[in-house]
Amino acid sequence: MHDAGEVNEDPTEFDPRRLARLRRYTWWSIVPMMPVYAVFPAIDLATGGYGAPEVVVLALVALLVAVDGTQLSTLLMSGFGHGPRYPVARGLVLVAGLAAAGYAMSTNPYGLFWVLPVGGLVGVHVSLATPRLRWPIQLVALVVTTAVAWVGGALGGPHPMVGMFFAFYAIVIVSMISALTVGVVWFWDMVLTLDRARSVSGELAIARERLRFAADLHDVQGHHLQAIALKAELAERLVGNDDDAARAQAAEVAELARTALRDTRAVVQGYRRSNLTGELTNAREILEAAGVKTEVRGDATLVPPPLQPLFGALVREGTTNILRHSRARRCTLDIAVDGSRTRVALSNDAANPAGGQGGSGIDGLRHRFATLNGHVDSRHDGERFELIGTAEEPGAAL
Image 1 (tube, rainbow, N blue to C red):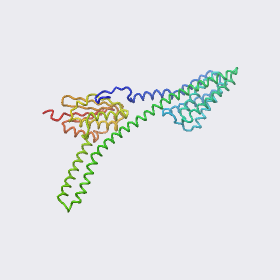
Image 2 (cartoon, rainbow, N blue to C red):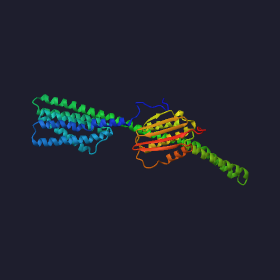
Image 3 (cartoon, one colour):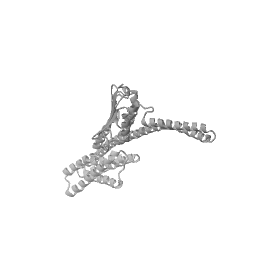
Image 4 (tube, one colour):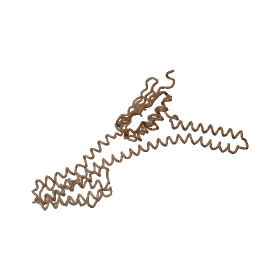
């Protein structure tokens, strides 16, 4: 269990930089592979002794397969099941690749190289398919590719066993490339699912905080308003029958209204059941749920009790600003107590561009700190934003 002033070094915490690195790794593992596979047919075209018309046609097919496969691979960065547009045209590209592979294998042994881009395209199509069609597409593509390889090898080889070797080679290559592609995409799809769940968790944490405030406000307003309504109704009935009692009831209504107003202000300003330690815990939960790595430096329990609500309001306002007006990945809260003087600073690393001197929330904080001879500063340096509050314990100078 972490103390409010303890630095959190849990390596399992969410770090957006890890997700960015994993995204780059996944992109380089998927998207550039089709052009790499297309290099092997180019070797075949350069060494296979084809005529000029054959080279042109086969090169165009290889280029078409590479471009189409690369474009489809970019869709895999959104996870499984994002089927491509124009599926018939995409299927015809795969058929063209199979036909080119069969012709190349029937011409010379290096035609085996054409199985690589075909296998890559099969893996991409399988990953983009819905779960219901994933296995059928894999099996049909594997059977067709094997048959094409067997026929091509049988027609071009001097021995019938050549066709069997080509067929076995096609089974191994297509199965291996498809499995690798599906495996990488499956892992990335799980990461995306967890990231979406984390985002939902952050939204729920914010909603929970709003509900907590609403519950506090309801507790304050509900009782007072019900009592005011009952006493006002009683005063109305007493008018003309017992004017003294009616005036007494009206005075009680006025006093209840003033009490409700004071309690409501206390809730809004954070005086009611609010302290720095509680607000730090709440801020850390909300920010961590929203994907902002939060570090607390210093001990909140050393802050004098009279200043706890004041700095609790500062932390609450700073947390709200981070969630609403930044793309922060890291937040730091520094607590420094020097005798009777306390300083609390919140900083984040990715604030939106400065657009003014601060909102009404920060202006309200300045007025509240001023009543205790304190002050609030906000600093915007590039993407870094810092909110600093300083105050001295009342009566400390006496």
